Length: 224
Image (cartoon, rainbow, N blue to C red; front, side):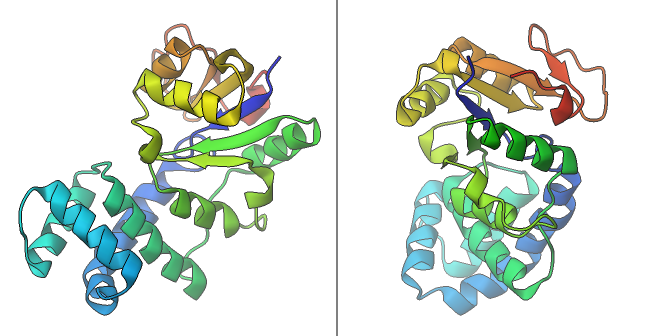
């Protein structure tokens, strides 16, 4: 029996276009000004130091900003950059510059599963902070009370089997008790290899080959 539903965000609970056409461009545009305005904040200072270390060089501030913009342009999953993006998006949400997108069918079924006693968790390459911001500022209100746990790349890459084993252990269940939802086969393969149940979300009915994974066009077709 499924005890926990672990879900991806982009292309699964939320539209890919919201992330790629709203959040990423917003972070790219505002990153230089945000870094210059908050460089002395403790959290920002730590993230910049981590990003500089990841870049492998003693970059000055402007060079580091350019490097991080390049990472954004190439959609690189770099943990300190993701955390910094989350801080920038927090400013945007608070100013009302945009609203977190979540599909209506996802909201309906997440609430239903929660009422049925199934625990819910998120696993996304975006930082936990960014995840909570997205679900906290939606047209359906604050959805964060639905979720028991959030995971990002600090627990490991989404295509690494070990990440899913670590998540199950952290949740205190066997992998077989977890159903993982994603729109990417490589992530589903890794989760299945860890022992989790899986379902692919193919919202665009792309006809993509998801191999052995059950396929759903929306949350209403997910079988728990």
